[in-house]
Length: 185
Image 1 (cartoon, one colour):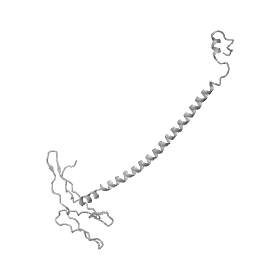
Image 2 (tube, helix red, strand yellow):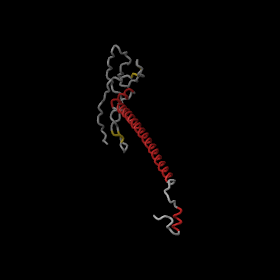
Image 3 (tube, one colour):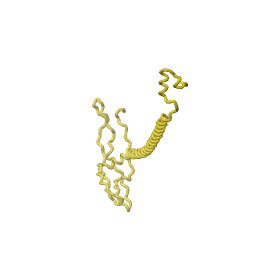
Image 4 (cartoon, one colour):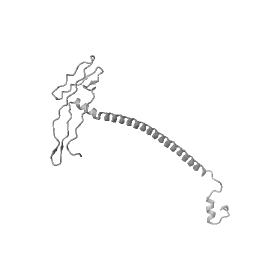
C-alpha cells in the first residue's frame, strides 16, 4: 500500500481516495486528551485511596490503644475479684454477716441414705477482744459466752467519711475440717 491512490485500480482506488493523504493532527488531539484525563483520574484515585488507608491506620492505632486500656482495666477488675474471692476474705465477710462454719458435710446417697452425721451449726467461741488504746473509743460490748452469734452493729462512719466495719482489723481465723466418713467422689 505504498503506492499512491492514483495507481490503484478499481475498488482499491475508490477506498484510497477516502483516506486522507497527509498526516492528520485532528485525530491526535482527542487521544492526547484521553490519555491526560486517564492519568489525572488515576492520580486522583491513588490520592483518595492513600488518604483512606492512612485514615484506617490511624483508626487502627486508636483501637489498639483503647484495647490495651480496656485489657488493663479488665485485669485490674479480675485482681479485685480474685482478692475478694480468697478464702480468708470470704470467711471474714461471712463472720461480719453473722454466719458460722457448717461443720462436717453430710451427703445424700443415690439410694436415699444419709452418709455422715448431721449436726446443727454453732458459733465458735470468739477470742478475747484486744484492749482499745486510750485514743480509740470503746464501741463494742464483750462477746457473748452462750455460743450464739451476736448481732453485727451497723457500720459507723469515720472522720474521713469511710464506713468502719467492726472487726475489720482482726486477723481471720481458720479451722481444720475433719475428713468426712462418706466415700469420696
